[in-house]
Image (cartoon, rainbow, N blue to C red; front, top):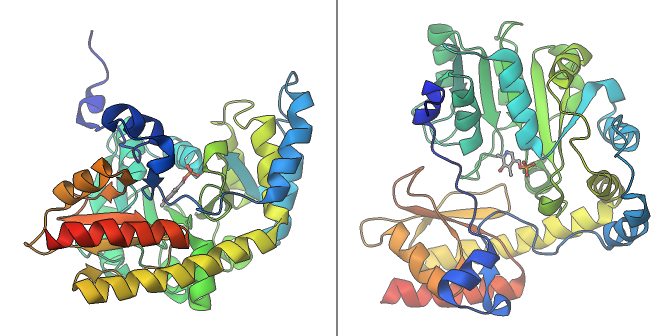
Length: 366
Ligand SMILES: *Cc1c(COP(=O)(O)O)cnc(C)c1O
């Protein structure tokens, strides 16, 4: 059977290897496996979420609240905007899908960084759009602007902090860039790791209210999958001008968020203390990664997230290292499909990180 021609060019997204698969493939006990591959919160989620989810189980027979009134109101309050400025997706991934389907089509151009979140390209190709990339490793807004002028893209993705590299832009650079972009170009600011960046450096933080009031062509994305520790619940969101949200909502399938997920995200948002504890632990543990890299003379990229990217020289091969770690039950991300010879490691608990350093060191010396 023939399928849409533009699907031929899409590589299926490769998620971080799940623990279940490592159990099967390597015969390692689940308790001996540490997953530092998908930037999940090693502290789990707020205990308040677990309590709340327990009490909501009795509502499972009913369809979810499709208006998502509580979660939207909580997010609106968080960013000092209105509920009509918020859309909820099954992960912010789904919001990315909506906005590409809403704005791009076969032949459209979509501009993004040289190395960035893989889903932008995959969703772009769903609609047959053409991906345009910068050449700099980090977001260079001058280069973005030059390509904007030359290529006239429909959509521009800015990922700050960027995945899988971890670097982040000062918010001012984004404001300056937006001031030069016309109203009909949709600019996406993907801030999946912003909780971590904000804790490390307030200059990275974006004033979302001002952003969307000044610019009707921008959408700010956040997620509950990272700092909030709810990757398994699949909840993300977009904040934008009400007109943008109205159009995206036409593409949203009804009941795209389960009752359980809605409740979990709403309660998670109310427990600011848990997030603060998580980001503080992350920064503390990040310092150990920086020291380790220095000791071992391996380059890392200065990270504003909960992961570290190790960039190897010709002495090491990232795929070999990732596989050798996997055989010891340590799941990390080989970035060879993004970037030459690098691995991405999620910052775990003190104990998980110690184990990683121990295993990694042996590999580096062998
Ligand atoms: C993890 C991530 C997302 C979204 O994750 P969801 O689980 O779909 O909410 C979006 N953008 C970036 C850059 C990410 O790393």
